[in-house]
Amino acid sequence: MADPTGESKTEVLRLDFDRRLMLQFRGSTITSDAGLLAYRELDDALHLTDTAANTLADARTGKNGRHRLAGLLRQAVFGRLAGYEDVNDAERLCRDPAMRWAVGDRAIAGSAASASQMGRFETKWLSRPENLATLADLPGRWIDKVRRRREPKIIILDMDSSESPTYGEQEGSAYNGHFACTCYHPLFVFNQFGDVERCTLRPGNIHSADGWRAVLEPVIARYRGIVKHLYFRGDAAFANPEVYEFLEAEGASYTIRLPANQVLQDKIGHLLKRPVGRPPHEVRRYYASFRYQAQSWNKPRHVVAKIEWHPGELYPSVGFIVTNLARSAEGIVAFYNRRGTCEQYIKEGKNAVKWTRLSCRTFAANAVRLQLHAIAYNLGNFMRTLAMPKTAKPWSLTSLREKLIKIGAKVVNHGRYVTFQLAEVAVSRQLFADILSLIARLRPPPAPA
Image 1 (cartoon, one colour):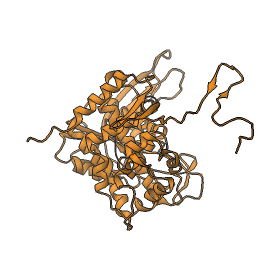
Image 2: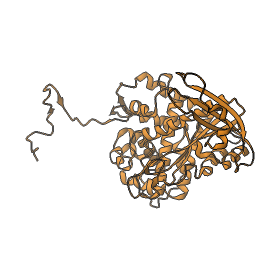
Image 3: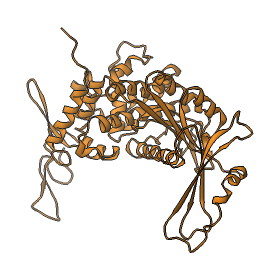
């Protein structure tokens, strides 16, 4: 049937603002996510998704399963890395050549999983209790594989909660007065490299530290006898004697912000008086260190206070930290302040992999989505910390997505090979080659003949 506008479908399109421009749709096979192939190379070098799929229980009973669990898991992880956080995006991604090669197996010659297949995978198969428990362990297992390449002598753990706003009748969502929204209230543990050690989804109206032991204890158990020393940092939500006693029993050092009270204020009363003389134009800081025991504590503990007088302020800013570190008061405060990077990691998770997008109806399905977002975040962070040349080290996960993953490419099929002709814009050929070289160094040495 002829086109109703009177033009042929093969005729070029013209633009009125400049008639010298012509648009042609030649049907070339192209992709806008060619950089995913570098992440697939890193995944293969570290044996991440293959070993992860081996630990998942396949609940499919039919004999005509088209995609292996490893391929479905790759599609879920790589899709989130590329900024496609919705299952509906699979309807287009299943035909994308970069995604098909990243998934592998039958997807190369045909297509990757459709939206309905990915929906069943995430909301039905992975939401089974045994698979959800396996997903919760995956970030730690992946970090254990990477740790052999890093060989850290110490591990610093930062624990913090966050909010994931909800917009419907989602199971477990509730209004949270602190965040002033209806949300879920997930809990995260990060290490000093920015990896998610473990996370869990919680209802929106519970305390920030609720369920801390179930999240923190498996992480610390993995490092027993592995690293020289463990450190823990947390905000005032974790100022709980049970937390102190647990960390002390594990031999871990900790710095935890302590809510102020009148007894603590009296301990530093001499520093809370306004300094004599003309107000200074710079911030004045004072530190104090003393022993303190609350009624609920089983023994006195070391407390550090920091007092700041800011220009133009009538009263000082005061903060207290409980710790078992044997350092100066100023050194303890400086160590604690570096936990601010944990909040930056949470912000990157929200912006780069959209882990606040928990839009399923059931709580279990949303818990699965959070875990998939977390392992996608970790894969992106492995790329940043292990496989990026020095010139690209400052790139955030969002920058990596926009510059490295979002590379346009034309796909040319030959008899024996498939060529991705990449556009050389934000990432040059030399930079891409350096990334592949660094990934190659992460591969284990070949077994002796």
